[in-house]
Length: 71
Image (tube, rainbow, N blue to C red; front, side):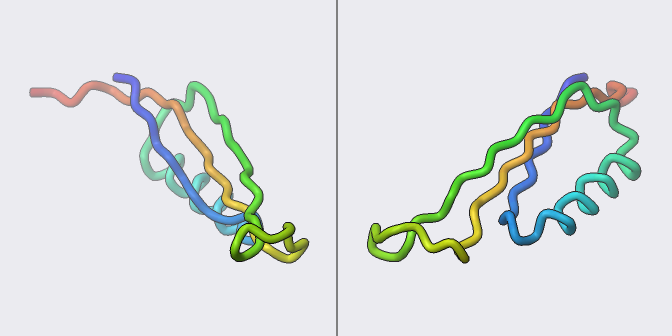
């Protein structure tokens, strides 16, 4: 059965996100079919110019397959 798992973080915490994804893959036993992601910059407050120190949102989508549970 194919499934999707979504991970969300900020670009300043990529190392922790990577650990979280790898830990999930080991524990779940999922057969990963594909991984894709997106980085969205954060704008300054009130629509102002971008702040070079603002963290951007990171979204990772893992498309995976698991065995169908026995009924």
